[in-house]
Image (tube, rainbow, N blue to C red; front, side, top):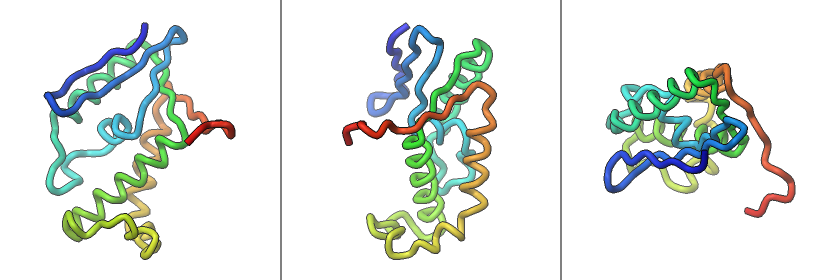
Amino acid sequence: MGIRQYNLDSRSRIQITIDKSNEVYADSNFLLYCFIKPSSLDPPVDRQRFNLAKQLLFGFLQKKIRIVISSLALDEAWYIYLKLLYQRDHGKDAWTPNTLKNHPEIITTYKDNLEKLQKSILAHPYRRVVGVPEDATL
């Protein structure tokens, strides 16, 4: 089927790839848009993106299209969500590239949120989690 792009506005888009095996790769942004509530963040994230992602996810369910999720995409979604939650509670400028490195206890504070995200993603009936191959170029 190839690559299809869904433009949300001139600055952003959700890109999905559906191959002959009827699978779609979900990146970290798609996972976040599908599985977190925009109201859980402050300032609220653009609801249009969440609505489009939910519509796509519902369409995949109806057509039994399998969502392929890499362990790297799960890790990125987890990290981005942690950052967004921290910024919600401490201000947008509070998160720096070294925040987590210098304060690993932050994970404990948001453990329940992160576990809920992970469980929601893994509960999807048509999903396949794949690892990153050892020979992958970073």
